[in-house]
Length: 463
Ligand code: AMP
Image (cartoon, rainbow, N blue to C red; front, side, top):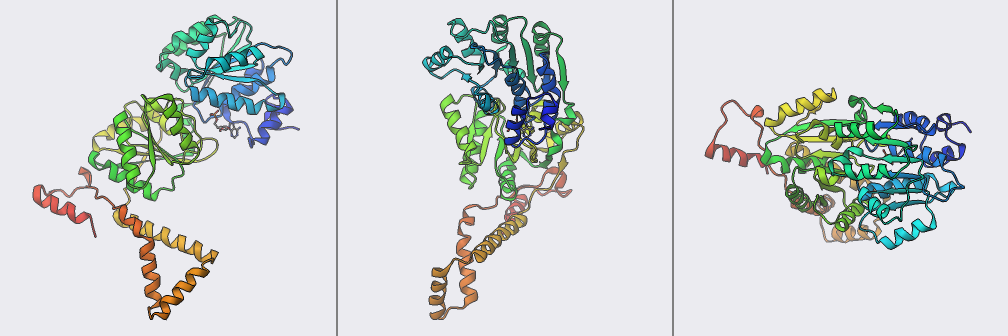
């Protein structure tokens, strides 16, 4: 069997496994990293989640495993428990045919189980720095003979303060090991780490302007700060959202926004930095299982969040740093799908958006907000589409009898149908469309103030 994956040097069995998972062709980072890692060289990959980096380092590790050895052969260090778990799951899947033994290790889990698994024999360990070090110090985890060490999302580990832990982990591994480092950005401390611990690494970076943004439709809406919630609500009505991630600046902001959205009929939960691990995992599970469609998160809380199939990323607040913007929107448009990234921008922040556009060398188009009339029309179109589906299904025998009874009472068929539709729309009443004031550049030159303005604003609320 010849596939693009075998051409990278992968064994047919691994190529077959990924083919069964539906991977038709390697992603750019896989094409670059797999051949390098198969030869045992060090590699630095500048890549975000969603680029296929997990498979890029996992497949060569699996191929290079020595089935006759009983010790840990490779270790992957990740910033968060979730990522550790996800990487371990992915490796387990990729290595199913060779019955690979992968152990995720992170804090919050009982030690006993981890110790038992370690003593039974493990090929690959995936874990967070703190707990890995704990087990190393307890001499339960011996990394002195590993062949490969991977740092995943190194910049996240840096910003979470794990650099010293990582150095300590490096120190207990053999100097002959292969090291692979993945990071969305390469700030100086990460480059220094690479210089100190890596052996003439091959670098693979995606040009910033290519950071998967082709798959992402980026738009912005200009809106006054106080109308942001109303604007977001309108967009939620119109956009074909399957899963949305909304970024808010503060923890409190995230919580309040999630509540407001829920109240408006869009079930949302907040994910913020000082949540306990259990509640965090519960929220993420609900999101993953599609029991909630909307997650409102701060940047800190969204670290290590690795969920595919996010159809929309909303910047409720524009981040200060252009790189954070790129990082945020990279949560959508992943794994060959397209995504939408929407930014709510206040007039004062326009220059900041320009900076982001400059850095990314793309335009982030300004689009007018849906008007109240747009929303009404959209609601009606949806209602009619739903009716059409039920008409096609045609299974309304009992209801036809009810209609006949109403006709027998002398009602008009047209009236019955219209009233029934009205009843079907009753819950719309619970979702009033809030008015949105124009931004300064949309306002007429002599903008009325005080009473006249309030009267005008009332007028916009429409019927
Ligand atoms: P990652 O960047 O490792 O988090 O991967 C993002 C997603 O892309 C995961 O759901 C992978 O299963 C998927 N994926 C990885 N490689 C490929 C590929 N070559 N073709 C299609 N999907 C892939």
